[in-house]
Length: 205
Image (cartoon, rainbow, N blue to C red):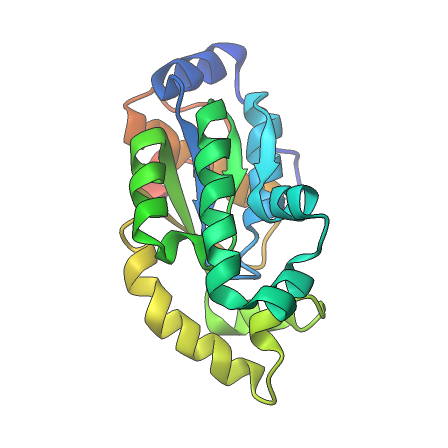
């Protein structure tokens, strides 16, 4: 398969100018690829990349599973909200958020005010295949992880749908999904399509 062309410098500059001080914020369920795709998009656009879970672990000196276990989900969400609000002051950048972050109304408002949100929408089989490879998912420490994921999809997908953009993800090369995200951002921000190998008309904002 041929390598995808990188965005042109002019195209990147136009997209970043349209962003202004806003961040590109990835939302979605665990396993959707927010961090992996976020890193690719950041590299394509020469923007800094931040991961809110990694930042939470850095400031708390504990892992996310440890925080869940010691303090419970409500305390974790409060810390997550504070960390994301602080990170959003540093745009333009690409920011990956935890699966539950966008469920917080104040966090959603802050993301709306300081960012362009991108929901990476994945189906259940893809999520299960990815999360089953990792043991660091506190919400899936359950005899029926598939059932938990289905419940989370039912609860969260209607809220994720409020994101500025929805980009379907699938089992494909990260570069291809990242290119589709950039194309969707161009369409959303009124920037002429960047040469990323992903036609804008295939991505539904």
